[in-house]
Image 1 (cartoon, rainbow, N blue to C red):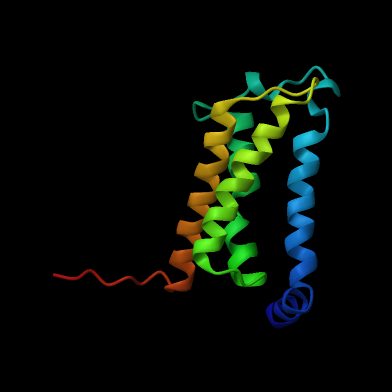
Image 2 (spheres, rainbow, N blue to C red; image 1 turned 90 degrees about the vertical axis):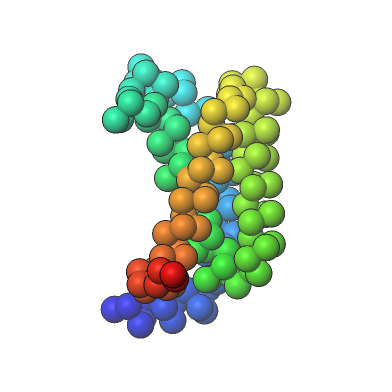
Length: 132
C-alpha cells in the first residue's frame, strides 16, 4: 500500500502540489463565515482558537508536499511557503466578506514551521544523536 501511494505521488507530484495550492486559495476566498451560526472565532481547543488551529493544520503539509513530492529546494520551499502564508491572509484584506487577521497569518507560518520540524524528524528517522 505504501509503495503504491509512493508511486502515485511520484507520478502526480505536480498535480498534488498545485492541487494543494488551489485548496488553500479556495479556503482563502470562499465566504466560509456566512454558512451557519457556528463561528470558529468563538471555539477554543486547549486555549487556542479553533480558527488559528485550523490555519496551522492547513499549512502543516506544505514542506512535505513542496520538498518531498514536488522536489523544491529547501531554501525555495521556505521562501515560497512564507510568501504563500502571508499572501493567503493578505488576499482577505481586499475581500469584503473576509477579514484580514495578523494572528491568522502567524498561525499559517507556525503550522508551516511545525510541518518542517515533523518532516525533519521523519527524515532523520527520529534518531538524532546528541553531540558532546
